[in-house]
Length: 459
Ligand SMILES: Cc1cc2nc3c(=O)[nH]c(=O)nc-3n(C[C@H](O)[C@H](O)[C@H](O)COP(=O)(O)OP(=O)(O)OC[C@H]3O[C@@H](n4cnc5c(N)ncnc54)[C@H](O)[C@@H]3O)c2cc1C
Image (cartoon, rainbow, N blue to C red; front, side, top):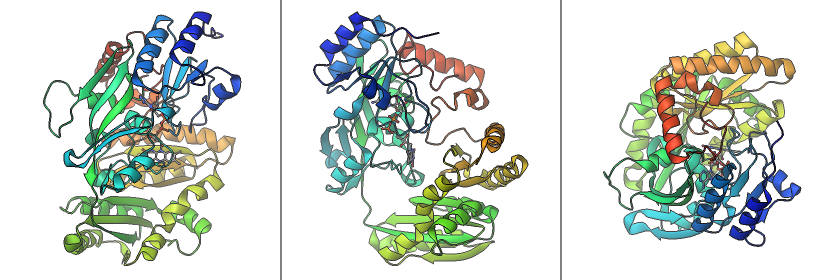
């Protein structure tokens, strides 16, 4: 059924709320905000660029009156179609709400608007000797709002946690158009339901975040990089469980399987080792104690199936050790521009079963699968690389079996990318009817008319 265009009345309201240059309705601008990194797209009816919280409240109130969808957007770098306006409506781009409002080292917090880029925040915090732990590799071009809405993370999560563990409070606007604050400015709080953690990971379906109070961490003074290669993926996966079972938690524990290493080697040259699997490990801390922490992690990394353990002594060596990881993305793109990129997660001790299961799925469905990622959290990026239509069809069948395997191993569908549009049909695999029912009730309490990012997250 063709969608109705926005009414003239609503257009007039938008023009009032968003004066010159901050409301776009031309086709070219709408196309620019119609897609994200999922490669899906759908045209919005308008795109608005708020500068302040009050405009977001007025916008949601107006859209609620006219039953028009409101889709929050950072920089559209998510991989799940979470910002695609599938039912049209108004895309709210937070790119102009990009001020760092306060950095307060004494209280270990920073207050920011949602459009601040993760990378810009890290640079500002660096001057105070601090950092915000969530570190997606898209940090230079993704926003804090997007990071919070997807609970996006990266390698450091294994030691420092995800946005859920690194956010103290939020200001937001729910679907009925009312603004509210939740959380605290303190490092402890036991005052009612934890709405902050609820909004984090809600993908813009419960409220639009207009300000965030983030918990920041002092930077460690030293860091050391290790590279361990193993005979087999199973041996590397068992080493991950050993490393995580001892007290020195590394600040990165990344896994790369044999297929990924071969691809990276073909692309990146001899600097990339060929092995059954590889772990990239980073240990941080104070200079005086780092040595013993590196020793403890090295002892755990050694064991059955280890080929070689190298510890970088200089920055150049560190860069060389990371060469394999850096070569991976371009290498995959060369084989399959339409790769299917999943980010499943299992308990760390079940990683050996997951990597074995993935090998079997790859053989059964005859689809090339490359696995790598944040093994310290049991979070693997499983990339299916179909090269033609027949392989694409097989890859989709394989995907359903991959999710079933992950659930059977007590894991879940996504560790950091979220659900969006592309994974919501699989939600009943991961959550019971009653849990999904509670989620729907929560959605209705925040967004009674279902105008916030419709078609996402909940099946
Ligand atoms: C090359 C590349 C590498 C990546 N690496 C990683 C990685 O290492 N780890 C990782 O976790 N992800 C990674 N991602 C995915 C992506 O960068 C993250 O999901 C990121 O957090 C999205 O931020 P964004 O600003 O682009 O948000 P968008 O994509 O614009 O939006 C994402 C979601 O957040 C919602 N949203 C945005 N702003 C708000 C707001 N103010 N209030 C409420 N909801 C809001 C949107 O509605 C949408 O549901 C990568 C992506 C790319 C392209």
